[in-house]
Amino acid sequence: MLHRFGVVVAASTAVLIFAGGLVTSTGSGLSVPDWPTTYGWNMFTFPIDKWVGGIYYEHSHRLIASGVGVLILVLAAWLWRAEPRRWVRRLGYAALAAVVTQGILGGITVLWFLPDPISIAHAGLAQLVFCLTVAIALVTSRGWKRGSTLDDGPLRTVSVATTALIYVQILLGATMRHTGAGLAIPDFPLAFGQLVPPVWTGPIAIHFAHRVGALVVAVFVLATVAHVLSHHRGRPELKRPALLLAAGLVVQITLGALTVLSGKEYIINSLHVVTGALLLVTSLVLALRAHRSRFAADVETVRVAA
Image (cartoon, rainbow, N blue to C red; front, side, top):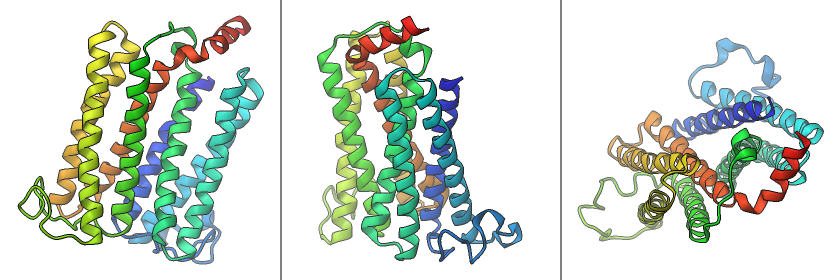
C-alpha cells in the first residue's frame, strides 16, 4: 500500500509540473495577482464561474499544488510511522521540506512579479520534488526489496552523469522560458539558417546553449542505453528504463523542435516541460537501480522485518 500511494504521489507531481508548464506557456503567472488568496477569496472557495482566461490556469495550478502538498505530507507521515529504513524516511522528510519551500517560492514569484531568478528556482525545485517522490515510490516497491544486486561501476558513473546533465538541461530550459528566449532563434534545426548563430545577444546565447545541451544529453543517454543493452540485456529492471530513456529522448527532441516551429504553441510547450521531467526521473530510476548494491544491507533488514 505504501508503494502504491508513493506512485500516486509521484504521478500527481507530474500533473503539477504539467499544470505549471501551462501557466508559463500561456503567460498566466500574474493572472491571480495576490497570494495565498485569490482576488481576496480563500483559495479553496474562489467561485468557479470566475475561473476564466489566465485565472483558470493559475488558480488550477495553485489548487493542484495544494493537493500535492497534502499528499506529500501524508506520505512523509506514513514513512515516519511504517518505514524501517532511516534513509527512506529522510527522503520523505526531504520531499516535504522541498514541497513547502516550493509553495513559498511560488507565492514569492507572484508577489514579486515573476523575477527571473526566483521563477527559475521555482521550476528547478519542482523537478527535485518529482525526483524525491519517484525515488520513494521506487525504493518502497517489491522489486527494489527483492531484486538482485549489481556491481557495474561504469553504469553507475554514466547513469549519474546522465541524470545530472538532464537536470542541468532542464535548468537551461527554465532559464530560456522565463527570460523570454524561447524564440530567440526562430528556426530549427539551424540557427538563422546556419549551424552557429551569426549574431549574438543574451537571449540567443541562452537559446543556443539549450540546443547544445540537448546534444550533450543525447550523447550521454545513448551511451547509457548502449551500455545497458550490451551488458544487462537480460535484466528487465535495467532494460525497461533504458528503452524508455531512448524513446523519451526522441519524443523530447521532437517536442523541442515543434515548440520552436509552432511559435511556442502552449500545449506543445507544456508537454516539452513535462516530458523533460519524465526523462529526468527515468534516468534517476536507472541510476538508483545501478547503485542498489550500496543499499544491500538495508534491503536485507527489510526482508527480515517482513
